[in-house]
Image 1 (cartoon, rainbow, N blue to C red):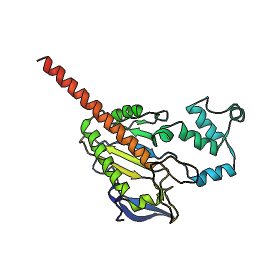
Image 2: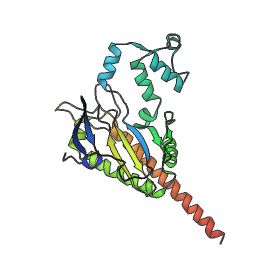
Image 3: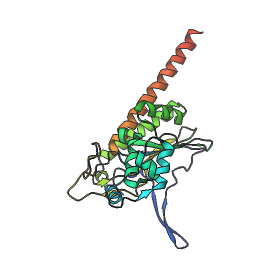
Image 4: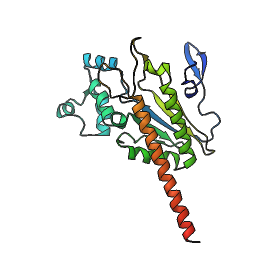
Length: 255
């Protein structure tokens, strides 16, 4: 792969067989990290393909499992009819899931964070604003300035690579994540992962990735999410820098 995105995706090491199953062998993104801290951000203004939406509409099967997921997050989300049925259609669930998270408002959402002790936090579905994202980033990094700056630099480099990538211009990127990983030695990086729903657009089409989605456009809003993340990281860096300056000023005034 000679595309500018090559340094931002796991290295491919071929196929491997286990019994009758065949698997893709990829680079271990946690190699060399001690007690890694990990964050998964699902990118884009939607997490379903247009084909999925059309299929879900055609086969409007009622799903009790999706109703239960909806109620668990927000008991008031289902309509009176859906409460009576104790079920929703997949089409209804897919759209609700994205519009009630920062997917629709910011172009990405935090799926989960694993801290150095192995504990996992998943309660980020109700994040809607950049300020809330900034708080989550400060929690994720323990307000460590070097790590925040490393992530910010990596995302700026990714933004440039995406702008120059022929692959990115000609592919709809749905359900893909950015994987943030760091440890206490200040090793930090960001990787593009999960391309199961990434599909090429017709030869005559090129996507902008930075405009809202309208059905039929195949726009994914990936760059909207990336811009939001970069802005939140900039804000987090400013917050920590101000805190350190204030702390230094207090120390000086007390000597």
